[in-house]
Amino acid sequence: MVTRRSFVAGNWKMNGLKKDGLSLAKSLVSKVKKLDNSNVEIVICPPFTLLATTGSALKGTKIKLGGQDCHFSNTGSHTGDISASMVKDAGCKYVIVGHSERRINHREGNDIIKKKAEAALLNGLTIILCIGETLNQRITKKTQTVIRRQIVGSLPKSSRSKNTIIAYEPIWAIGTGKTATPSQAQEIHKFIRYQLVKCIGPSESKKMRIVYGGSVKPENAKALLGQPDVDGGLIGGASLVSSDFFSIIQSCS
Image 1 (tube, one colour):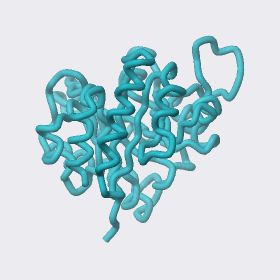
Image 2 (cartoon, one colour):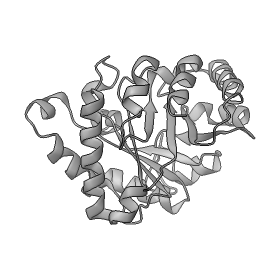
Image 3 (cartoon, one colour):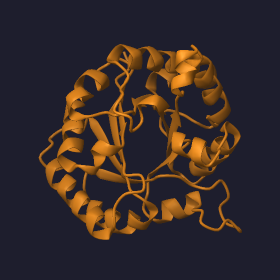
Image 4 (tube, rainbow, N blue to C red):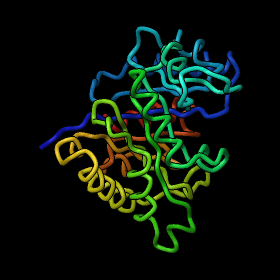
């Protein structure tokens, strides 16, 4: 039986100024110090403007730093973009790619996301690859088709359990207050793991961590993240409140 280490990442999205980020990071660090458990890997993904501030607060702690996105080119004429090498240079160990807000708001397709993921892996970053369906796709029973297409189209050939984490985030549950039931989450996570067998083989599929995101709160975290194929969470709004985020971390320990 394969034992996968739990993984919890906080995606701060476009929230926080320097004082807010520093205060939130310090508060979380003080709480995590009391956590005598190495079974949970913890990451914070602040906005690019807060990477330096947050990174300084996290230095030497159990919490690692991640970026929210990266460009697929290492350098060039890409005003407003940040390359994977820059994300790494800022002190990050992880980077989110393919978040639904990038897929929708910036019209990023699987081909672009795959190129970003490949660039991140080439720069030694661990990717948090997001996939998920819309409410209409779920209602029309296209969830598995969409998930399969996203995995095949977005996952780099070099992805392995040591450098890739899959985040299943049903779009209909992001910031809406709606949440997949524990059984719904488990059903899709199991399906994702089955699809990964075809892409990276059975051994790597068993070891790769698949986390859930979508209105995870302290009240529902234990049930959601306790499912057999759910290895943690990519947390949005609740990661902006240190006590809530810490409670979710505790639910994985």
